[in-house]
Length: 279
Image 1: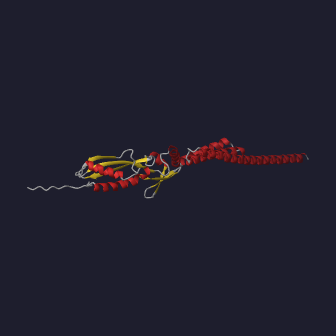
Image 2: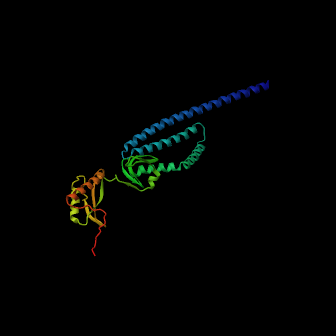
């Protein structure tokens, strides 16, 4: 009888422990889910507040605002994982250590990707160019179509798209032809040695006056540049609005030819004079 009583007590104790363990497991599960829901709601609220605040900062470009929102959201989700893991009874310190090791291994495996990413951030902050600018990067020339976080798309004048990694852009020399409102047009013209210098300069000035897009200030520059083997070269420099550059460039070439003909100035070319001497 005593043995039967002991067995019954042991069985009852086991049932009580199982009930307690199940109750604890259920409580842990419920606590973890509630914690997760609270974190999700908090993330949405904080993201909405951050977005509203950044949208009021008109000096920040949209790509930078989006980057800040994504980075903050990512950090909040990492923090949520740590908090929820703690609610489920997982050692947060061990989890942080695991995440750190995993992050280090990931960063080493995608080193070039991270280089391009941070280079993209620097491009957005420093703004050496913006979308729509006409630039020259190393041996590539074209219009900036898109500035991404990892690469930048450049469209050449013949409409070929070139994808350039941002890491290469930050290490290259960039010529931005669109940043300044005005741009100088540099041309040279060759005239015969027989043409008077003042006649050539007068013809060029007349050609300049035919184009209203050429700015009066800085004043147009027309001077003798060099004495070549078969002709004299003249340097012509005029200023115009950036958007008018190519139209002024080509039209001025045509106007100078017309004015040279009008003033009797011969546009010389490379040739050899042969003098026959009688003996």
